[in-house]
Image 1 (tube, rainbow, N blue to C red):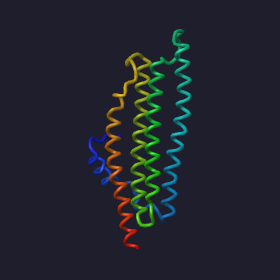
Image 2: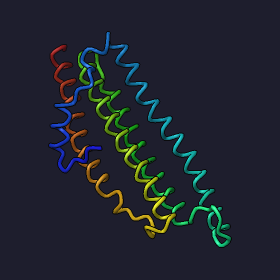
Image 3: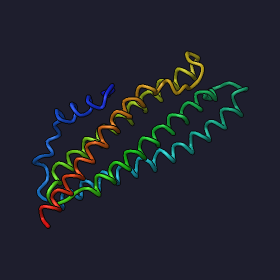
Image 4: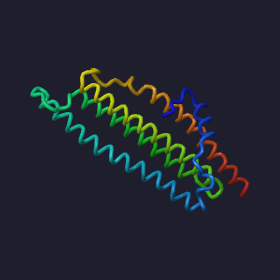
Length: 190
């Protein structure tokens, strides 16, 4: 996963990003379908993580009840770590969903290729964040369960939060650019 130190790093990455979208859409309607699919994918991710959160809360409760007896029970601190990571993943998935909805609201017949490219870039970045959190969740929960770490600490995801904040800055500027070009087109057409 790329961790961006500045929003300009995100801008540079976006300029160099090649996903072959430029020739991927036959027409505006096809682009709209892909943008809708991006929204549905984020909704499904949120739904799955919410289900997993409920299961992890059950595991957390079970770990408290059975921890004194030992055995193959997850340590309560490790179960708590999983819950915290799931909350983080849900937060980022919700942000990604809001990005996709705003992008979809900005698509027109004049800008659909660039909007689709922007949507895909946002989707891929948010999935990278999601997978990085998933990997860290597994590693940190395992380390806590084995006694190599004591507990979950938000500093464990601080670099991701910082990078995502820089991504959001870039996202806001790019979305304003897309919307301002819509305004210019509307004025020209009037």
